Image (cartoon, rainbow, N blue to C red):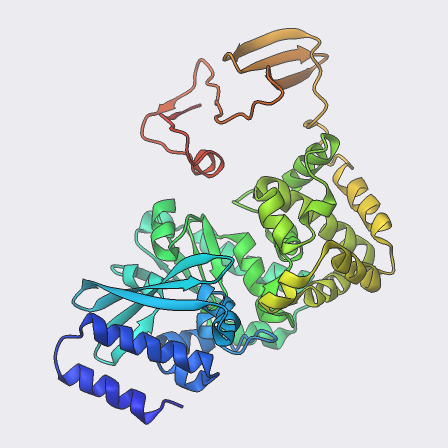
Length: 458
């Protein structure tokens, strides 16, 4: 229900001419006050009706989440601190164009200070909050599949098989996870929205942060530069088919998504080799991914955390069925306060309660699974220095050497100084390779954001 005072203020602003910054600030302050006072119906009225309809269309609700339209935002995550007076907030607005204003919200507590963005749009419906990606959704074409509305910019982005496999990804998940037929029928009728970006820069523009793609739980859409983005489709299907909270321990959410959809277009079958290498060299352990904080801060790099997550989830699923895996996932989900409170020991207790196995048994089983060597032609962490030297290069800080020994190519990167951290990487070109002068690697940028890169060699 929209409150009459709010409607009257919008009508007054619309008929009185151009909105000014102080008007926008007042509108947003009213929105925040509605949230603080838990007037969620009133708060919903500040969002564009079309956006609200998009968020509600699939009926996805998260356990313990009272306001979906702005969920997972820094404002919502700090709302209890604001209510209690521990955190203060302030706003500043900037006019972007005649139809849009940007709001910068500053939230400050004794422990932290952070900023987040909001956007207002004025159109024939009035003046409303809109998600960031709405500002960039111009000149789009649309194609419908069985389960998706796909929005894209160029026909070169699409092909018939990609669209076919988009639907097949949903049905593979449904078959593996025993999803009831009526859930698929409802999705077929109401459709998931999929925005296919052309570049990683466009994804960053749409989301407001660097990414190759993601599933937005607030609006139940996927924004990605991949087609199909199996990992994000799996994350969506978890929300659509399972009883979960808004926040999930990431090793479970991404472990299940990797099991069902790989990551970055890579098959899940490559990932156990990375996990085996990580464990064999004592880089990280399974204990290091169990909590939200450790997953994101202690490890941080998903090239390590995702394969380890896959190891635990695949082992549990093979041993105890997908139903038991989803039971664990559900118990390790909830609101942000619950996830932040969880420790490694409390996670281990949930795992043991559901599986009937001790953490030591689960860890041993997961380790055995990732080291079972499904692809014997690649053996991470088993490099030998013997054999014929095929290539050798490096700098004063590290050495790169490739040797051939009994039919195996051994690639070793060795640091001369044990305290040195490598801050760059090199890719090697064969004699018949092709040089792409204008190509930029998103993986290089992800791993070395502060290091320059001229080009890549193949």
